[in-house]
Structures are given as structure tokens and as C-alpha cells.
Length: 110
Length: 490
Image (tube, rainbow over all chains, first blue to last red; front, side, top):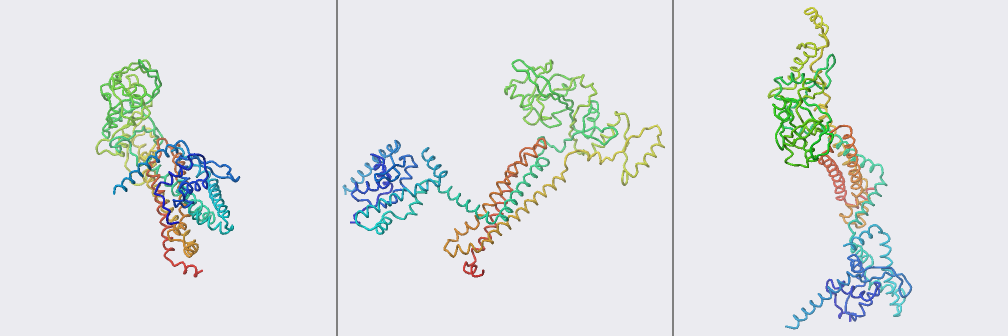
């Protein structure tokens, strides 16, 4: 089971985080859960590594953090996508699509 | 860009809040993970253990988050300074000594050198400034005091063979007006003799006032660079413009180079008029350029012998063997018998006349520089001893750190930290003191500019280098020793 998991390509964690908070503000735990679920547990992400990435994205102004109350009534830090972050998400999504198409083409041509 | 700056500033200014928030955020995540594992049937202890494993090393992740904030360098610097200050407090006496040594060394050095710089090192802004002398009259009956001459005295003195050229100048405030220019009070320098040849300057624009214009008292004028820029808006056609000075028209013929006019506060130079030439007012400052081979001593002697005459007496120059004062009664006696009708006033020593000039001598200044240098050297020795001593005093602490597994690199920085902090504080205080003393000297002596930056920087750099060398040399020696031996030795 564990052998099926793959390491994330460099730089893609940022893209996944932006996508995870695109719909609604989420706290770190919820982001980790979401990535785990929608990727069908494919990625091997050390949970803790999410946080440095979140702080970096916040510093760049792509996400904004706010303290709120979680569903189980505890204080949690929620991250929301900013307008700048949305533009970045669009840009990175497009770039990723081009890249993966190109890689697929190369792989299938052989 | 703005978000980035805001985040960094917040991380720095509200450091503890940001740290608390980081703890809370990571704790929240771990709690949720533990709950999830417990819901899956694990007991609390096992759930906690597994959560930690899945999450990764908590301390390492915190460090990575701090890195992500982009304030790492400043935070570490702050931590080091903080540690240094704490260590210094523990050894307050030697720290205060180190700080004071550095500060005083820098302060004294800067103060003395700005003075020396002013007196000795900065030459007059004229070619061959050594040839320029100021000529004073001999006051009757008293030791000579620096003072002004009448025009007649100037004319006679200027004929001395010792002088290649000379100028007499007197200043006064006058009203300048011209078409298109608002009337203004300016400082007018009335000149006789040759201002331009004496100082070796020539106008940057136009021409100098000619000898014929001076002799004829013609109304030609040379203006200062400041006046040309401020009143004439640097108009190149200002030359040949006619201006009115107290009702009399003058034609501007030239512009002086900036900061080369004498006296420096004059806005406009014009020849003295025929009437002014006749006045017997004692108002002229005479500056002369010594002729080739002439010395101040010779010029003085000649001046004494020629110039006392019009003041209503004669001067007899006598070369003596031995002290002047001892032969004075004898001299009076002889003179009286030789010429009973000759009124005899005072007898001066020529060397006394020469020493009467109020400027500090080169010797005094050299002495002051030597003391300043000595102050810096003593400060350097003191700093070396203090910083090295500080490190040696913490020999045991260093050994303990090494025994506990600190790397030599870490231990080195920890051990010299307090010395570096003390020297840095001393440097800051010293530089601040330098500026204060320089300001003070500036307020006492007209014309002392803020000293040259090299003076201000050289001494602090020397002391920092010496201080760090002291600490480093001692630390390296301590590091070479085997920590186990050091610990056992106690």
C-alpha cells in the first residue's frame, strides 16, 4: 500500500494548497485531510511540511490567515485565497496542464 | 511585496505572539490527528505517538516555519545580542571597562584630529599658501597686537621688497540694486593693491579688476560666485551689467571662483575711491605674498624698521648678544647720552613680536596629535586585554560546552559574543561622542568643518579589529586545549 504513494514533484505542494482553499477558507488540518481525500491518498505528504508552505504563501500574499472557531468549537487558523492568490492559482494550473500534457505526449510517443 | 513586508514586520515586532500562534496552530493539528486515531480504536498514548510520526518532527517543522517568515537573520542576530548583553551584565565591570575604553579612545581621537585637521592639514585654498602673510601694524608703546592699517600705512608697507604683491581690503555692508533685481544688503570689499595676484586667483568669468582701475578708483566690480548665482541666477551675461551701490553705478567685470574670495563673506569687490584713499581710517587688513626667498622674519624686521616712522617716532633695530632685557638699562643710558633730545619709548624683543600671532603653533598641534595617537594605542591595548581576558575568564564554560557536544564553531561564537557586543556598544557611543565633540569644537572655532570621515572611521575600525583579534586569539587558544583536561584542572 505504502509503496503506491509518490513524492510530490518540487513546487506542486503550493499549487495543491491554493486549490484546497479556493472554495472556502480552511485550517491546516482540513487542508491536509482534503489533499489526502481527493488525491485518494496518492501523495506522500509529511503533514507537518504543510505549515511552512502555508506560512510562505501567506507571506507572498496569496493566502490570508484568520483565527476562527472550528467545527468542534476550538480556535483554529483559517486560510483563505486572496485575489492575488487566485491569479496565481490560475497561472499555475495552466502551467501544470501544459507541462503534464507535454510529458504525457513524450511518454506516449515512444 | 506589501504583504511580504507586513508579514516580516509582524514576525519581528510581535515575535512572541507569532510564536504562540505557531504553537497553537500545530497543536490544533496534532489534537485532531490524535482524535482521528482514537476514533479508529487506538488508546490515547498510541494515538499520540502515531500522530507525532505522521506529523513529522515538531521542532524541525517550527524551524521551517520560522524560515518561511523570512526574518531568520534578524531573529538570530537579536538572540545573539540578547545573550551578549546578559553575559555582559554578569561581568559588568570588565564590560563597562571595555565599552568605556573603546568609546573614549574613539572620542578623543576624533576630537583632536578634527582640530589638527583644521589647524594644520587643511591648507588655504590658494596656490603656495605658505607665501601668504597677514601684515599687522606695531601698536605704539605696547606689544604688537593684530590690527588694521590705514591706507597710507598699507601703501608704505606694500613697497617692501619682501612682498611680491599685496592687497588691502576693508569690508562694509552696502545696498545693491540693479534693474530687475530687488535691492539687497550685501558685503562689499573695498580693495587697494592687487587682490588677484596676491591670492593667485582669477575670475571664473570675465576679468579681474585692473591696476589702472584700482589706481583711478574706477567703478569696476567683481562679484562672488554666491551673489552671481543667487541674485543674477548664474546669468553669463551678468558681466557688463551696471549695478548701483549706495547710489553709485558700478560695472560688473568678473565673477570670483566659489570659496576663493577673500574675505570669504564678501559678495562684491570694488576699488577704493579717491576719497577713501585719503581717509586716515585704520580699517584695512593687509595680506601680502612674500617674494621669492623672503621669510616672515625678514619681512617683519623690515616692516618694523620702515613702518614705525609715520607713527611719530623712529625705530632702532639692535642686534644683541644675550638677553634683551639685561641690556635695556644700559641701552637707555647710551641712547640718552648720544641723543638727549630723542624720546625713547619702549624696547621690544623682535622674537616677541613674531610670537604675538595668536594661532596655535605647528609644534602644539603635533604634540596634540601625538597624544591622540597615544590615546588610541592605549585604548587598543586596553581593549585587547579586556576582550582576551573576558574569553579566558570563560575558559571553563567553553570546556563544558565542548564536553556537552557543542561544535567548536558554535562554542567559538558563543564565547566571543559578549566581547563583540561590548566593543560594538563602545563603538556606537564613541562615534556619537565624536560627533558631539566635533560640533562643540566647531562652535568654538570659526571655520572648523565636520572632520574628515576618515578620521571618524579609522579609529573605530582599528579598535574593532584589535578587540576582535584579542577575543579570537584567546578563544582559539582555549579551543585548542582539551576540554577534559581543563575541567579536571579545576
